[in-house]
Length: 328
Ligand code: NGS
Image (tube, rainbow, N blue to C red; front, side, top):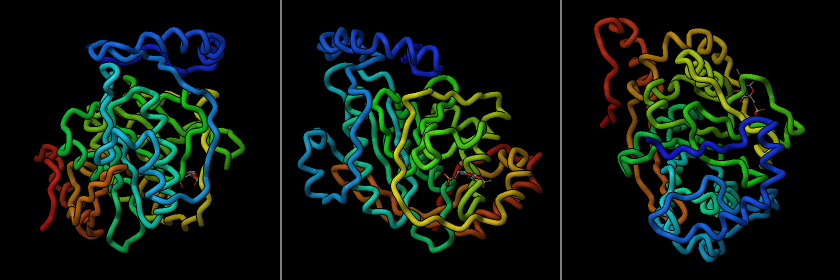
């Protein structure tokens, strides 16, 4: 029996009702979190709407904050109660150190208040090709489970997205959950019905079942839509909280959209069996263990990924999905 919370802000009606009883419930649970053996409550004591601090930060100041005290390598283990889930938070990354500081300063206290066990993994693309968000998330997942095999929930998270409300629970349910539903940049409206970008939570076994994300999307756009299509084709629906899933997006220059993305999307679900976790070839250049995060610096070759895909397509019928390889 998994430790999933039945309560969540999944639909508007429920959110309304929960909002009404929120203050009462949080006070009740505040007194209930005492024994190290008891399961953490689904609705821990939370703050609700948060102030968003986007001012530039120094690493040394962040490390002095209260939330840093019990962090090691970006990992936090609950001591007050038994956490329901163990989250691997995966951040695809390149050249955004100022955002990373603001993000970590903001997210750590939220995850700790939500009573999770978690590890934060920053996955940095070292090769100079266009950014490949899907491959980085896949690599982050594979390296995270090597680090700790008991991660039950994968959270992929763009570094520029700051949650505005800590009742937006970072946990996995049976179906994948989209976290970044309402973003300031879009005037707090959902971009489109099938949007699954920004940040989301997928159970680890579901992420493996769909073979992770596609490794083929270089440059901006489409890889999140492809993930949505993969999940749909495996019979999953995307859950969204209303009202509390609000985000501030940090400013940055917009990348050029990749012209190839529509073609890749069209063939996406057919390709998914041999383009994903099982076709990754990458090299782990270094692992940095910081108090606030673990960073994997990785490189992969465009041609390698493409060649693997072509090869797999020819031999698809004969071969079962293979384990990911690192190249030397
Ligand atoms: C869609 C992109 C998604 C992207 C979304 C929001 O058009 O990858 O916009 O982008 N899909 C395609 O291009 C096929 S945002 O405005 O947040 O940068 O996530």
